[in-house]
Image (cartoon, rainbow, N blue to C red; front, side):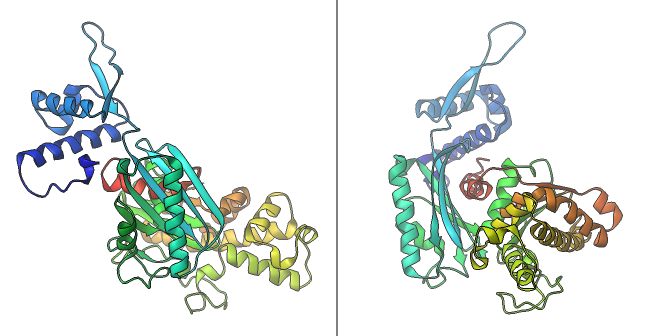
Length: 402
């Protein structure tokens, strides 16, 4: 993909024209409507003769295509143009504790191909990493898409990640270089990596309910918990990319030992792992649940409890409600600190959103000042496969194509 892969740092006429073509393609791909040649030239600040020449070259290379004609009251109707969505593709890869998924998207972020392995277990080992490499290569081969048409691959991985350097600190941290360096040597396209929660935030920002907001919290609430913070229209990464470790804020009352080695972390009381522990403790105290007629206690996962709650199981409802209330109290403190206009709950807990919504709001009222609370909306994610879509969007975002 010479248009985006070539280095244009050297100042010469050819590179200057290539940079102008990139601006044209980026403009058209971001635009919500097709544009005429004069409209394109005006927005990228080119003369009509120069812009026409560059656009015709892009048309000849089948990067830009005609998409109809503009409606006018009289006279000749000018031609409208857009980027051919099948000109290039991006890959999204999500690596979680249990499960790995890959999807390939065209320039309109429409899914072209997808595959997942729900039996995958993330381990900090070379064997696990090599399995992921094979998984990617197999997916690319099966998709029948030429690698030269792939603009890049975005990776969302659980744990702490520095998106600037490409290092994953919790998994595959035994590499001599970064995770980005490793994958870039394996494949012929650029690779980007970020924390899975930041990737979820990117999806909501560009394709979901955060599109028209400048200040948003996106909570990734599944087995664990992470927070993507959008402030003044930008996702906050922090100095090393660790911003949003909401689960390790000391807002909890529990004495449970956290995975980080500390006690009192919010993540020991809120999240799928916490819900499983709560359920087991209550059963051991003599309470009962319809779930015990379906599975052994040790086999019950947090998704089972959330599903049982939505189906009316009293214990599951109570435990889910309690988690929502604790989460609301914690979010209330964050609302006071950063004053978001919107909070989006994504992840596995959306299974029980009807129960969680009221309990989270109730918890918020205990800690949030009235004015910021009144102007903060709480919603649940509706973006299908949001995390993997966000991973694919990393590539287009880097190239300013979205």
